[in-house]
Image: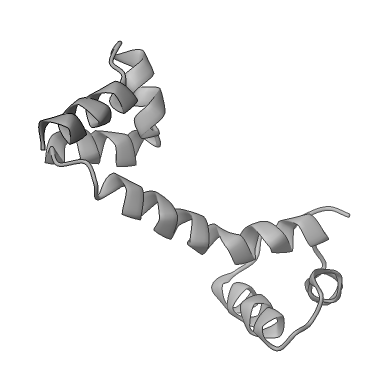
Length: 96
């Protein structure tokens, strides 16, 4: 099944249907999209919220903004810059 672009009303309707206990397949059939696409739409906000929580741990605003705007994870950033965030965290904990 081809996925069509869902507007805000469709997304709201899908989320409401899911909260009311409807299956992903039933929601997908009613909106004319795939079950997988409905799963992505429903879980997208959870993922974004989780990413923001993690990025809020970055104490340097410029780095935090860079990571957010470029969709780079903290792990990817540390690898690209040749640093180990895990070693740094362990060192900080030892200092306490």
